[in-house]
Length: 636
Image (cartoon, rainbow, N blue to C red; front, side, top):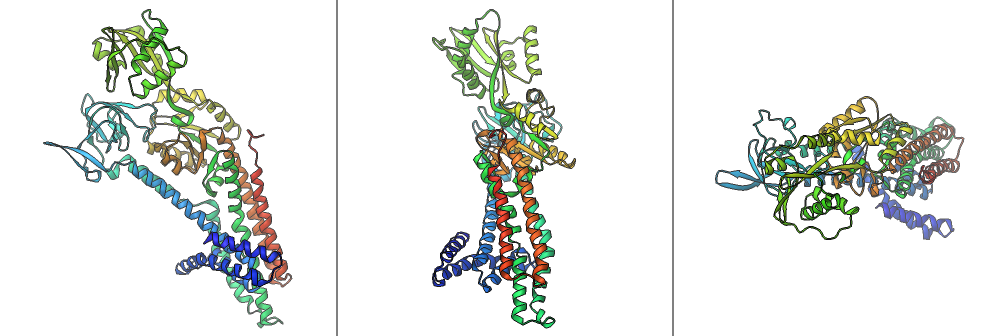
């Protein structure tokens, strides 16, 4: 309907301006009114049903009044703008619903529950606290709970934001608590996370409706109910303005009873007031600015989802960053390669590549990738009997000698000896720096150590510095990763306020704490676990290429192609857009404030009123278009 309104309006206006006979252009205006009135009439029916007349009703009456006075093009423009606004609103609602749908799709539908004589499948909703479920390799975990059998690596990026899969195994002693968050990370699991290699048996601690993932869905849904600033202002304004204008126009129709004029003159005056009072400039003051701002942002690689996010960008005084995939690249990188017991570095690297090339674990792939970068690969050792040690590392043989690459648990289990003191000092330093490490042993002797870490993006430090220079009062890091890793990354990028081991709900609490200090905060993240924080913050900003679908749908702003250096540009654009919206509102309301008394006193005819009215609309539109030429620091 909106497209039909716009097309027929343009055709009618074109044929009228080239001075064709009304027989040619008038049918297009009739069609324009037919298309545009359809949406209006539905809306007005709902308005009267709720007994809440608003600006839209005033616009429709003004459109009818314009037609009565022969100003078809102006009336058609009002109808088109209304339809366009409703279409944009519908699109925004569909986007929000899509976000909720993708979150819901992460929740497994069927669980394999352990029974006395085997196992059977049941709906996840039927699980009860205390049930034991079986989780097969490469499948999603069905419920929040604690590991009671088996061991495996679990990818928890969707919930906790851990950059590296977490090893899960049975606790050494039984827990007396039923609180999921009081159970150490190595033993607890969450619904929606992915089991990688081993079998697990999990005791359910929460029903499906109470799981962490279900809470994420609820939090995103609640946050999406918030209204835009301009929308709230318009609603307050119209509750007083619309009834006053309607009563005034009605009374002016009977001015001939007290003034020396005819009914037609009074009716003409009333319609003139109605046209002047039609807040066309006010209606387009925000949308025109938003369209210009969104277009300019898109040109720079930033997707802004409407007026509220654009306006909110201009008022943020704090920025909260997720770590993994946002400030960092979300991929482990070899940072240290140490040889022991007289082994040549090149020979040891070739041995590690030969062994880890058989592994499909994320750490193994990272090690092979990084070691190959600075090494000419030829004549790799002939590895035999490769075996994956689930949750511990890998094992292979070289000329009948056992090679193990894995964590301390793998070393102690297979060699049945403790780690030497000099090696313990090295790994203690790695732990203090937040690094993940693996040992390389040959025939029960440690011959090397490899340390890895999720490293910061190249531009992260400069972005943090630039944000502080722009006047951002709080720059914080909120991450589900361990404190050592978080502190190390924070130090490297220049963030001193770091909170680690945060669950999604903890990130929401942290954002709410900042908001309670009267600081408008932007949350920048990339994972499913960031979705609630993205939604509850003043403005949620997601990474594009690396971000999850749920994060991008939950966010208000998406930095396409993972260009974090577009963040300062987006905030600066929001500040400029907010100023222009204010200017446009002052212009539109100022014209109404001046022209209302002028037309009521009969000092302006309909032609002059339309000229001023249209002039303010054009002025507002051109003022908004200035945003298309906004220059960022990187453009200049």
